[in-house]
Length: 301
Image (cartoon, rainbow, N blue to C red):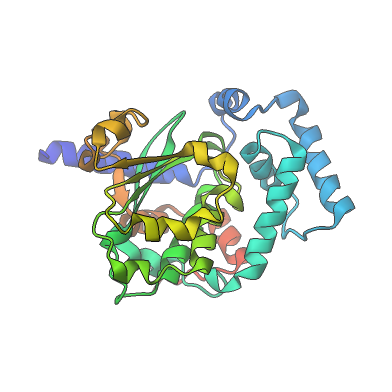
């Protein structure tokens, strides 16, 4: 890539991460919210209050927050069907209560060690949203445990879902299994598989537009068997298997949203280490407060 193009790309990546900490409700996003998540400005406040009342009346969970911005995440994730938003809020609270070791006392910035095991393409188009890429084969199980991969994913979700843009546009997942060996599969216990499914939209209030499995080998059946029992029937229509056929992938994800590795042209493409460096650079007092209240540690040493 020419030097000038590299500088321009780096600048756009900086702008994208700076925007990721912006929790403002921009007018153009509200128009998309009506189309994508059935949000109506005239009835939004009533829906939020109905969800808040449901939490009090049913007593099935004790969220750490009940302010409008927090409850809105769950309504958007379930297209403003209040009872469905409540069920997801209950699952979210149960997940955090069940697995406190995934975040309490965990050094947020130290998770940069996962490096290229997670990547993101940040064009953020409707229908695709944030493209999140998991590359298990790029992770060396001898360097750190699989639980750190789960912790890194949880941190990414908690930070991303603070922003209205991510709440409305959602995400698309690519699970690239190139390089996955028996050593990787051996680390995937049923508990870890369940945690990953929870983070993919079952418990977290995020919209997973679709999920794409690529570059797999004979280990796929063993790998995927661990996940099948936890995936809801309604989600299967959004899961697509492509093997190594990039043309098949391109039928679902526009090339301009994909990084060059997958035959695309998106240059707004970073790995987890770069992303955490940008979060450290552009973080706000509100982001720090929200993450610390959850239990994360933000060490700058």
